[in-house]
Length: 247
Image 1 (tube, helix red, strand yellow):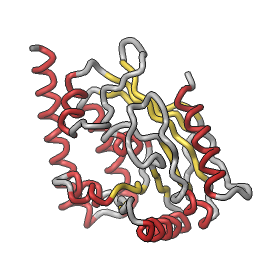
Image 2 (cartoon, rainbow, N blue to C red):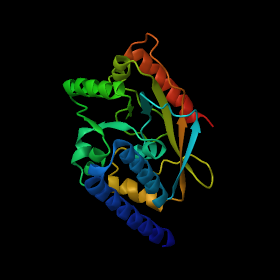
Image 3 (cartoon, rainbow, N blue to C red):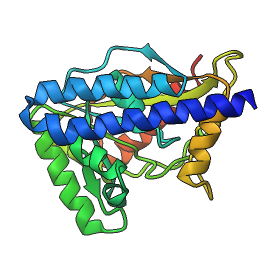
Image 4 (cartoon, rainbow, N blue to C red):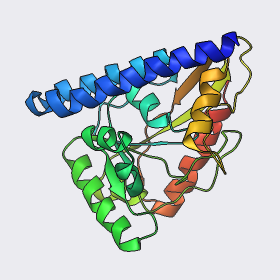
């Protein structure tokens, strides 16, 4: 009962935090400069993790200042907020996300690029938009698995979006995300959002779990060095897997 009560308290804090984020985007963002918006996104994302008792730990090399394309494995509905809690970037996400109540407004407000994953033509459009954003000096991020896994392994990486970094002639920096139990350090699949899980089931499981740590391991930026998008993507998948299983 104590754990259930604590979970309800976390949920109320989370909902109030989401409401603050929504009002900030609707009322404050129009008058802020881009750098100010980006800082607000970072601080808000850090606050979201704190309110659901998830500690953030960053390992590895420093983040590239950009322009750079970030790639990471994909486990949870929390992943975008996790990366934003470390640094601001423009994520590429599935198009139906922008139609979700509240979440859609939040993702649009933070500059997300949306893609119809089933449409080859739309993938080409998004690659072009990503390349333009990279040429402008921005940091863009993608989940090349295209969907979530439980974090115990990696799904195949899709190579299409890697073309944006080749076209813009910018590096790609690999990241690995993993969740562990804060008390034991053992891997945790609690926040995973896979299979037949609903968002509510995954959220409630996360709220009722013991405190967690999410570890973001940052790899060294890579350049294409003459590789095509498939060869480069395969090498990046190998590196993300190495980072994911590193101590």
